[in-house]
Amino acid sequence: MQNRFKWYMSLGLILLIVAFIASSLLGVYQLNWNDFMLLFKSIFDDTVAVNPTDAYIFFDVRMPRSILAIIMGAGLAVTGTSLQGMFKNPLATPGIIGITSGSALFAAVAIVLGGAIKEFLPEILHYSLISIAAFLGALLVMMLVYSISFKNGKTHVVIMLLAGVAIAALAEATTGFLTFISKDDELRDLTFWRLGSLGAANWPKVIILFMINLICISFLLGNGKALNAMMLGEENARHLGINVKKYHAKIIWLSSLVIGASVAFAGTIAFVGLIVPYILRLLLGSDYRIVLPLSALFGSLLLLTADIISRTTLAPIEIPIGIITAFMGAPVFILILLQFKKAL
Image 1: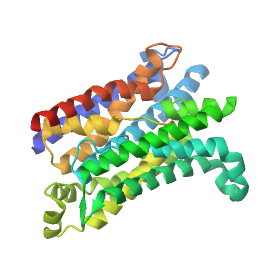
Image 2: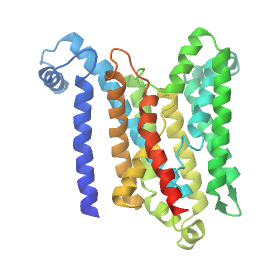
Image 3: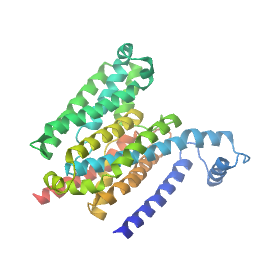
Image 4: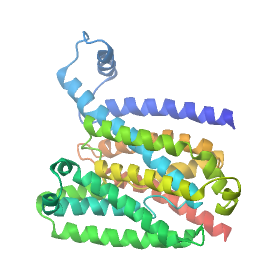
């Protein structure tokens, strides 16, 4: 198994480097291989002469966007894998149980009602109001779904999924209402949140998300052994010395933080946390000590690839990345349902 893990890790790293180079070269403004090599050399040698336009496109537009996709993809895939392990169900992803919709709803509330809300908040919070709202939305929905589905020391998965569907529907309806009553400038922001885009990527966002995801993913990656134990059932996990309540709380807080930050910076991007763990478990089994780190790598690869497709398929028009991931994830979701149907 260790050899297979190393092989998949090596393959993923090579594919990620290839995707990063492709992301740097492809787009409305074309860069060729020689341009790319010159720009890359200029990072380490400031005497290398480069075209100013090439430098702007590479360093200020495409590189922050590609790195944001890599960081965000890793976070979404690892949280999806952790939630699936915690609830012992492959359908328990942030999008399916309503966390993403709740986060987007709170972000929408901050966009439409932000002017009135800011009067009651310290000035230091004004510039990060949408990000804070997105995090609170993710956290509240996660806690609500968990409290509804938890009874007598157990998490009831069917109740959890149904609660998630109901909350997601309510959040979508409320977001739709906010869209209906919004002004023209607010409507553009709301469309961005609902369909997802990495077009607003910049270095400050990259640094903030990197710090958040670095801390959260580091802790989540250390949960592989506990998630393996919880797959045997919460009672059996307690007998093995796992503090189930503590691990549940840890996964809820960290996942909410990652999802809230991702929604705040790029809007709703669904299915990344569903596709990656499902395919990895098909290939490697359900050992979370292996699936979790590989989820981070292949989640990055998936979102970076989706971003390349979104901005090159109909260039110069950019397809919202949430639409691309939905096209990728919906068939996988149907496959999972068919698998459940066979097991009935």
